Length: 120
Image (cartoon, rainbow, N blue to C red; front, side, top):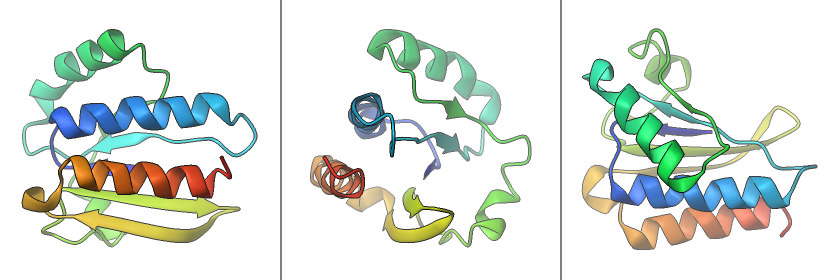
């Protein structure tokens, strides 16, 4: 699960990388993005474009009640991106990044953790 406050170039790269991991691991590979933007009405066209441009199969979603998600999943208020890795309904790892810390290096760390998790 990837929770993100807004779409940016690093998230676009992360979506493509995770999509590739999921496609190569049909047994242990499932993922989705949930965007928790303050302006959710502007996101659908951007998400549709991203999915088309990158040929993504991974779901890019906008929750119906995005304000409820941070409390339900205990997301840090200052997290721009939070990745939850889980197996058999148990959380195995959580990676959270503030906006200033979410960069190419953070994407690389998430991809490495996802590959390890998927046993690739």
